[in-house]
Image (tube, rainbow, N blue to C red; front, side):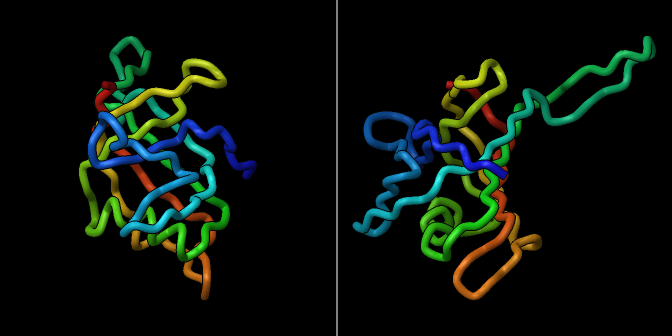
Length: 137
């Protein structure tokens, strides 16, 4: 995967002021951690509904996934500070599918995929963080 180097990926616990932090400069416990930018996916709905006509309708809240081919333990721990349990309410700025460089800010539920973490001594491979129940701000 080719990482997305645009500095518009952001995360925070509040949506205003300095609440949203760029992944390149996350401040965690007073220290700044630079998290590499993920490849991101965005779906404008959470499920599909087959219609009698044969058409398919997208329904539900948008979803997004941030994916790193490799992430260090320090980067993972910085992200984990936003979601210390299985899930947490956060605010994110992520790429949407509107255009190649289109980003939007959302309130979302961040879901930590602990079961599928591919652990290595100092890093994680094919690491994913999912966001669901996204509401555009």
